[in-house]
Length: 356
Image (cartoon, rainbow, N blue to C red; front, side, top):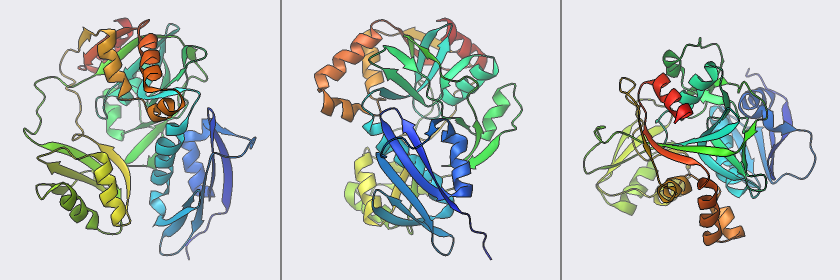
């Protein structure tokens, strides 16, 4: 007989947005490994409510603001994280939230941007192990009223293989999200600092890529693979699918033309599925045998790179205007030193970012 867990309700605050979740106790304990620092006593009505109730055959019913679907129990935290990232973060109005790591180096804020796989979490783990103050490995939160970066105290979700790059024994709780991760709490509490440095990570020009192909990786929760036929119909027959070596619902999609996220999501929705993760190119690791290369960036070039990583850009454009958003970001970056960085040997890269 399968063990049941008493459902529990918890309230979380993400700046001006709030989230209520009602989960079986074991899932809530796991969720709090990541987001427990945001938990608070119920103070006001929730912006978004998620209710998870037990069903049958290892599945549960997940209700997000009245929209229900049956999902595998082991996928609940993936869905819940997707709600936080794509609904809660996207609607925050008091802060600008970037997909970036944020450090406090001698009371100066450092924001490190770059696509998944370029090392934001690995660098942040190394910085924390070395005694540095990491405000986040995932979200850089800018407070426009106070003109500083604020701590975003979600725990770091680290691939277990990453620990071989740092002088640290892997002894943390494990959690399965898009893949198995070790959950590393941030060592420092609520830190804040003015933004003084922006570093945009990028691949070396000679990094191997598939010539002439658009590659994306997606994590799909769906009962079958009908979404692949729907996507092929939407963008043409040249799209090729393969199971990602990491498994866990990940697929590689290759096409001779770019695969828009919106088209992909529509194809998945047609077959009753749900897009739970997306990477534009196959995930790679930086070449940790090289020396890092840092190149100064003009404010205008930095603005272009930074705007593409603003998670709640739509909210800010709707509340203000595109011109306001562009002008504010340019103003913020005009007081910061901005660099492009091709990462290399881990500690050299970390020190270069700290000292540049």
